[in-house]
Image (cartoon, rainbow, N blue to C red; front, top):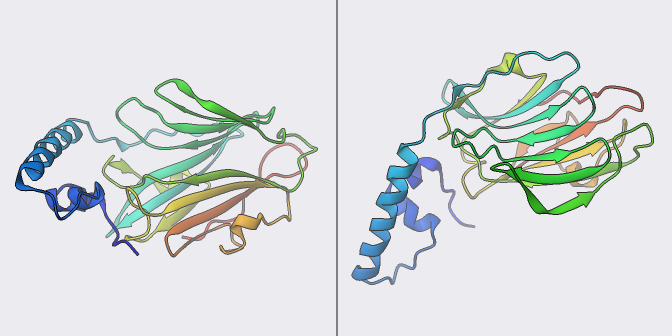
Length: 224
């Protein structure tokens, strides 16, 4: 199995070469070219401001569930799920570059991804989020995690929070799996995870969202 690559590794030239899977047989001239690219990428990364404490004011009828990476006594928000009052569900990443990447599962069943204000070319039609919803819908596995955005996680901002220890979620390793399910139904993809709803295990984090038959949302307690 490939050794875990952290964002701290990406700040070094050697770690970045591993991330890019640059062959160890590369010539000095090729390494020089890679070095120039690394320096450009690092300068661009350092120019992006840190997010800090995200402002998530309470909204009546809205529920939020976060995924945070533990770093000593600090918690860094890497992803969160927002259940809007009208029933739409959003899977969101904190980003300071204006890209605002997120996935949307709308009440009419439309599911798509969006970044930089542009929808992806692929749109899926899932079950509408209404009283006839049965079983579960899989919203995918989400990678590309870390703490470099500087998004400080405050437990009070969320109705539930899963805290992931170092070495599980990173830039290329690990993923967060999200499913939406009717009450009492355990999605197939989450059966290896805690019945509490979320659990970090191996190289992934899994969770499922229970949608009651009537208005509103109910999500199991999150392990953390």
